[in-house]
Image (cartoon, rainbow, N blue to C red; front, side, top):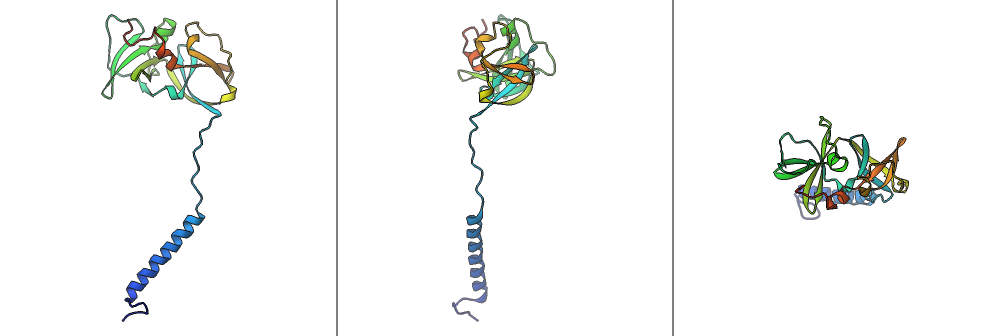
Length: 190
C-alpha cells in the first residue's frame, strides 16, 4: 500500500513529523529571548578587603591571582631578611612567601587560623604574601573613590592610591602590583 507521494504510510508520517519539528524549531527561534549580553561594568570597582595587623586595606581584585590558606609545610630560607616567610609547594610550583606586615611595618604577622596568603605575580613568577586575614570582596562605585588617605604608616603610602569608604572607616587601596615592582621587594630578600 502506498500513498499519493509513492512512499509507504510510515515514511509519509515520518516526513510529516520532521516537517512539523522544523516548523516548531523555526517558531522557537523567532520567539526566543536573547541571552543577556555581558557588559563590563565600568562604573564598579572590585577589591579584596584584607588586614595586616590592625590596618584594613583593599587590593584591586585583578591584581590578586588567588587566596590560599597558609601551607602546612613551609621551608625556611636561612640568611634572608626577617620578612621572608619561606618557600612552599603550591600544586607543584615553588611559591616564595613574604610576610607583608613584617616587610611594611617591621612587625611579624601574628600566626592564627585566619592567616591567608595572597598569590600575586612578579614578572611572571608567583609570589605569596602572608596577611592577617581576608574579609572578602567588596564593590564600590568608581566615582566614590577619594584621593584622601586615612592616617597610615609612611611605609604604606607609596603603595596606596586613594581610598573607599566602608561603613564609617576609610579603606586605602593597596596596589600589590606596585609593591612587587619596588626594588626593596625582591625575591631573594637579601
